[in-house]
Image (tube, rainbow, N blue to C red; front, side):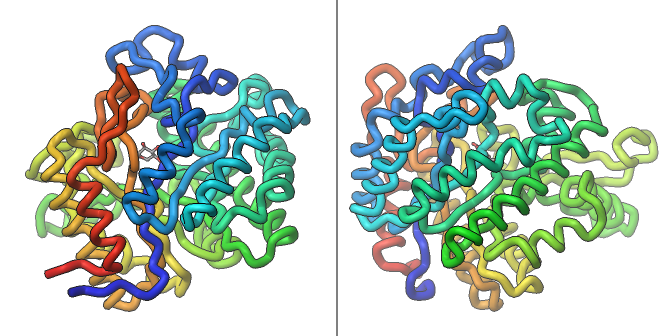
Length: 407
Ligand code: BGC
């Protein structure tokens, strides 16, 4: 048996817009109504109807023996117009968090997970100068009204992915392509919003840990040749550090984070290619191996290295997301056991990992991919909304119950 530290958090991770349904007052809803934005012409629509079925869903988490759950609170529900707060919605989320607490499940609450209210977007959204300040009244209100129920705060979900998908690849709203200047502004504003939120939460609730979720997309050298090793390093620097001012991320981790949240799923190979000046002379491509529904390869053995890199910060680490998009549930079960073995190794290597949040509890609305990706430990029938725990979910429950991996 490989035991995990006492009090280790076993959870799953989710985001409001992907599961709640009928979330109409945000930029994503509007985006989904436009033709060809979402695979198969899907839209989040009723999603998993979790807004109404949260009690049933939390009961399933209990059945899976989870002691933690990461969820996001939808800003556009709480603050439907600028400066106007909806007491009924605040009560709804109090009920959700209260129900989690009742079931002994510690809530990690994300404040921004890819969706923004329409009023905020109309004012220029995250690319505008005052973006970070515009986010603060929502943060203050939540901390005042819900702070007693929150176990951990996660301010912003994956600044780098949000900015790249919205302003470089155009896969997310507002759908801009190659706008490096806006990508820079958005990323800077998101980190600024984190710093302001961190300070605001700490003033009101000094004992509740606050962090954010960083996305770690790995680049590995395509060969042992020096030019490919340099290419991989360059590609990694671009995703990790551009567009952040030098030293900024380090300062955020050191001065404005009680823990490091890390989301890791994928890696690609990087090879030097003189014919690609626009890609920094790097060709990026999938390593050999089975491709997931997302079109990327996921190898559990990458997790140990991702975590080991964080040791130097000497901070608690939570894996805020990790999972596999596939309908082959036995693959997920195997992946999960292997990746948790890697997490255990990292703990042995003295990385202070305190918890693992699997992405995700239920098959849900996977943004631009609609309902084509199946990350869940629980399936959801798209016609009847019936939930069924998969074998991988049962396997995860056994690990959580034992707080250990069996040989
Ligand atoms: C996001 C999730 C998403 C997952 C799988 C993460 O980057 O935070 O919302 O569903 O990746 O693509």
